[in-house]
Length: 175
Image (cartoon, rainbow, N blue to C red; front, side, top):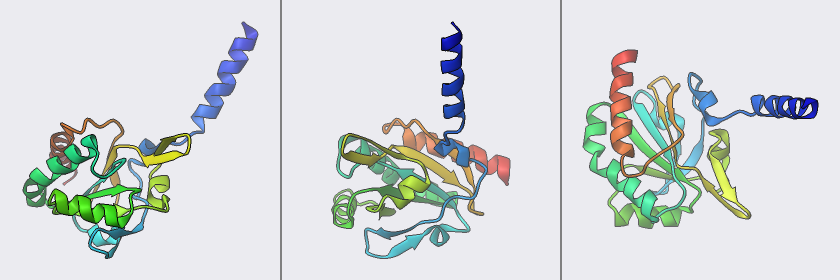
């Protein structure tokens, strides 16, 4: 019994020191400099003075990622009306983003994080074996650059609606 207690205590200390993406809520969002599907370089500053929905997703043109992107596309005008940018990020190359964006007529930036810098900064790296990808997670960032909400678990079918509801609530509370 004493050995079990010691083991649980050690595990607790290890996990207590492990930071997660949710630890960012209330903090300034990590900056990035990534290429958009149109070939331009984008940083967090390019989206300042508006709210930002920064969503990470695993892979272009896969079922869940396509559903998520199309739902953000379909709600894009509603997000624009409430002063909000939408930006997607994955590890895919820019040529993949260009095809994905064109195929589904995405009106927002899709950024290429091939060096995994943003994914690591936002602590959304996932994978198994040699396969690495960004976890499907979303951050809501206020106009001052602060992370005010983090969606760690995302249902691609409902996500844009959930983000809109949370964003509307946050804007009422924080403004």
